[in-house]
Length: 546
Image 1 (tube, helix red, strand yellow):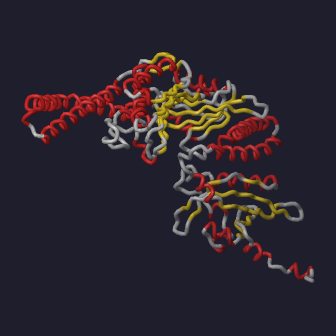
Image 2 (cartoon, helix red, strand yellow; image 1 turned 180 degrees about the horizontal axis):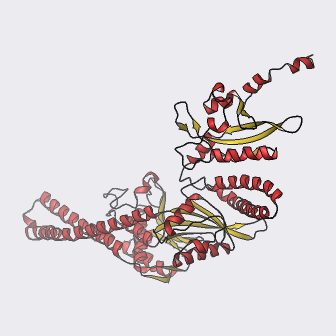
Image 3 (spheres, helix red, strand yellow; image 1 turned 90 degrees about the vertical axis):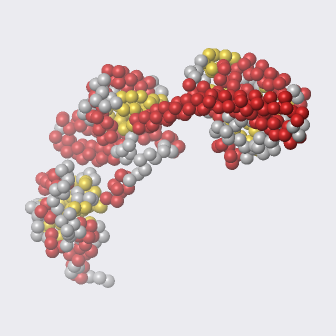
């Protein structure tokens, strides 16, 4: 058994220097008395170079960092320990380390300063313990700028926002208490710094998103530096916790927009807007307004997430202009093609009618091929003209009963097909009134039903079904057939101009019809897509907003 005497002969200096962790021993005058090996390794120093020297002589602020606060914050913490003889935990600090070549390396630390008292209760040493959290901070800064919101985040959002609000409220309450009682202020100040550090690190994690929270009186409870910077660029005003939203937006119209959007969320509405803000500089922002709800399901504020989408809006405008130029070009080319096409069709007709008897079978076949392709070219030009005109036309929407609108279109197309006895048409409910441009949507139904008739024409009995599916924000219509179908691998090519998945010998067509449908539905703010199985059939869907 080891004796007490042998324990008293332990080499405590060796134990301390080899202890796991980053430790520094300071005298009351802040002279370095000792350091652990891990501390020396982390700070790129040697024991004989720092012991006996004053703390801040060895570890000065980075002279190249004008905003460095490491020395000031650490000195304040050490003074607190010296004056109060109590341990003090500091918030995470940026404190760069001087390398042997004289340059500085960026580091982040989590420091704790603890007093060591002698038998009379006097300060003998200060143990300065730190944890190197540089890697953690770097990981947070390198997070993906445009990380998509996950489903889990949506489920946790209410809880997070409520906690954020409570922490901000608690910080405000602590700040008020600090003015009433000095002793209580020392305790509350430490707690407020800790909580604010957690809150701020959370909302600063994504620097491409402007974030802030307000209470029901529009006072700021929390905000990140990105929002603060954007506000100054837009209005030249400085915003901070406790500021009021009404005071920092100097443009009256912008202020009314922001207040109205926040009031909607205070009434319980989650909504997204894309609007232009700014007086000194104008920017487009895509903004999400989210009510903050407490445990009693009461709305106590609003959290706002906003992204600068000015570049995206400008790009979209450029694309629109390019599309207009392309449409004008297509329109011009289509018109220019008509004259030579008429000549080809006319002369081939003269050749067939006036000189047909003198042509052999091969010659007659060639003339017929010329006329057939000229006719097909004419149809292609007509479709191309429709496509180009559509880009320039304005919607003329009206409320019409879709049930009454679709039935005659479908019946007329079946009658025109000439084999109505082999076509089984099932028109279900269309959901009643809808708001759309009658001429354009008639073109959509005509193209989709015509395709259904065409691609099911080789079946003994063609079965065509029309119907709808109601949704919360849109109504989905569909045309289903039992035709030849297509391979879904090529579904992305369906709605492109001149894109066809079947040979012209099998089924005639120009390859413009579905592209025309897509452009019409896009102009209505809807979507269009298809599902199909080869030799089983296809279903084409399109939506209209409700």
